[in-house]
Image 1 (tube, helix red, strand yellow):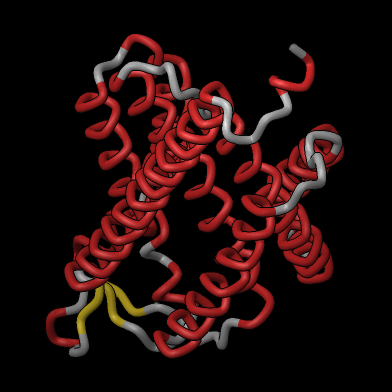
Image 2 (image 1 turned 180 degrees about the vertical axis):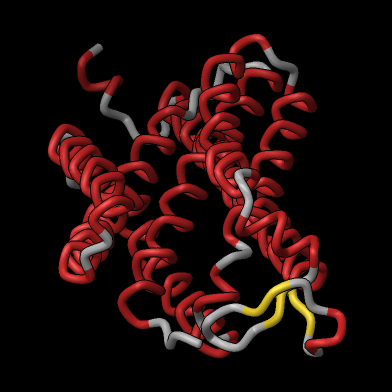
Length: 260
């Protein structure tokens, strides 16, 4: 019996190979779904940011409600969006949506979870639209593609490596908490040196999280999941990778972006 179990032509072996092939195909489809959700989210963010800038900024002083120190003109909508108390609502709304999605994802249908993710991506775009007031459009585009290349490489590493990255989790989480605390402090002290340190450390933290989260999302896949469970897992995976991409982009923009 032992020798027959080692026979490569035995039927059980063939069934195992077919099962492994099915798992591999399912995993590829699952990961593709995660990346597609993330890409659509980034597209929504970009469109929302550009739309806000179109309404908030004007080229002529005649139609302006205010002028920024860098010479740009704001419409009344721009003044309300970027200089009134509404700016804090715009800044905190995406964070609120992240908490909402994370808390409710288990009770949502796949379509509801998708809608919540799209709303979050749109709110993030509105929040990020202010970068067009600070940095040149050319440098924003350049840093975006730099971020895309770095993110793609790191995510590919996380997907293909045989090394267990789970040990990175606690270290990266501590680094993330440190970056958040330092960023809050810098809102009040406005130190350029501290901002530089936050950006450098932040890039390293979110680079590590990209590889770590990709491996974690891959390991979340289970061939026995029903379509609703797999859909919710894909959306949460896309949310994690989306946040890594956006935060890495913002940190790199702070380091390499050309200011207006």
